[in-house]
Length: 553
Ligand SMILES: NC(=O)C1=CN([C@@H]2O[C@H](COP(=O)(O)OP(=O)(O)OC[C@H]3O[C@@H](n4cnc5c(N)ncnc54)[C@H](O)[C@@H]3O)[C@@H](O)[C@H]2O)[C@@H](O)CC1
Ligand SMILES: Nc1ncnc2c1ncn2[C@@H]1O[C@H](COP(=O)(O)OP(=O)(O)O)[C@@H](O)[C@H]1O
Ligand SMILES: [K+]
Image 1 (cartoon, rainbow, N blue to C red):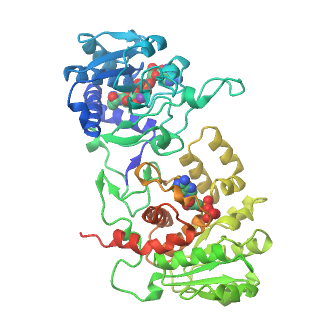
Image 2 (cartoon, rainbow, N blue to C red; image 1 turned 90 degrees about the horizontal axis):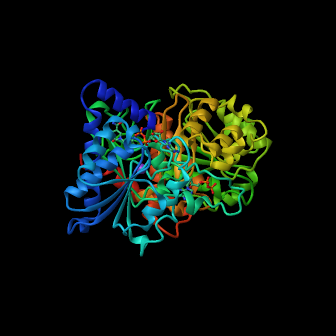
Image 3 (cartoon, rainbow, N blue to C red; image 1 turned 180 degrees about the vertical axis):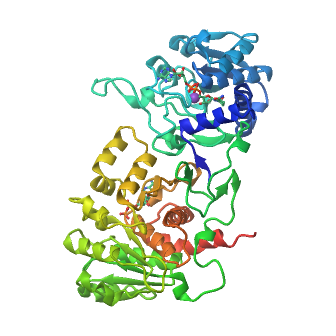
């Protein structure tokens, strides 16, 4: 799984490698520039045919330094390049200055002027090397005037101009995926979208992607992401393998890759039925709860998903009045009636290894009691650990008035799976800071630490965090978009899938189960495609599981 670095972690890696003498700043900058040029020509081979015109926009730091390298390489390849620098050449950092000096022997580098840039010849390619990891404030207005969506409208067919961002579209915060903007939103003519949103067709980043490429606005404005090696690979092997919990300090991306290469065994290795041995109890017994009469659908969706993903047995537990209704819909999923949560032991013996609580349950005292009963379950004599507990939907909302009461009961074998609304009810202060400028990764980490359990905060950029700080981003973006998942009941299916994977007595850490479930959930949605409704997800799982497990060594 690829590590998602923060700007600071990337800087530290570079500094450490420079200090160790394995790379130099100038060497990395040269590789960065070369990498951008070769990615452009790889992505648009037609640009190789004859030289073209580039507009290279450079900033006052090392991102600008990359721009000077790119301009030099393009000019050497016969292109014409109009180069502009925002900032004082005398104040450039040393490596950027060296590349500025080399470039000025080939062409002029003009001082930034929005009007001059916009009145200049129409470029075929715009290189955005204004700000990268070092941006600390909103994009200054004179830069937004050029890079913002309105910026290049003066040119004919401006929408056909290829836009390439170096490290990120300038203005993007690489830690949180946000686009801080200047100006007063209260002003009548203020419109952050065309003014400040700078988007690219291709973003070329270095060594490893950064969190902001995958969070928030990042996927909307980066186009595609290409990662190029700048000589740091030997310095930083990924610190945790797929199938093992993430390193507490390094967030990662849930995907079947390690150290830049495809890993064929993930997520198959996380699933229970990956060897010939075992009977049904070896794969765990899940209990999913359903609501009262007429409200059983969500619980049934979760139960079916738990069975499809591989739990040995699944029982749906509902109020007695709803047994007949549920019986009409269920075959392989078993069914029991339960009115008083205190009688849980009657329907759930010690062989139950996972519970899924919340979908369709309704909010209130009964749901709170059920959650309390389930969370109070200790490890049994048969199993060395407590049953896993997935709390979703109404199991979360029922504690909106007193989240502390929930966190007093949650334990390390618990996963909370809130969408943003449910998250705001349990963690109002953290939701607030996420709306300001805290990264979704940091916010989920704080929530997991407070609740003492795994927190999975949903969305196209789902973040899964453990109390020790381990965090994974699951990206249903770029080439894994699955907008069809925004459909009622998709979350219930995910909760059931997590329970189904975690139920196995041999299941790995809960965060690892949650990563695999989230990835498979999106794979199922992608395999079905448009028109998906929640029922379809479980039915796509056999096909998705086959692809995940039947891989040659
Ligand atoms: N040797 C290295 O460290 C390498 C750095 N690389 C490039 O260097 C970039 C990071 O370089 P830097 O740390 O110099 O950062 P940047 O070049 O992203 O920006 C830093 C500069 O912008 C100024 N600044 C920040 N926000 C501003 C704002 N809102 N308005 C006006 N000025 C603002 C800062 O004062 C500083 O002068 C990476 O994104 C990458 O493109 C690559 O060349 C790879 C090697
Ligand atoms: N635009 C989207 N792209 C990808 N996944 C999405 C998108 N919108 C929602 N999802 C996913 O779909 C599921 C929806 O869950 P949830 O909001 O709990 O819905 P429900 O309660 O109706 O089941 C989550 O797993 C979420 O991450
Ligand atoms: K940039």
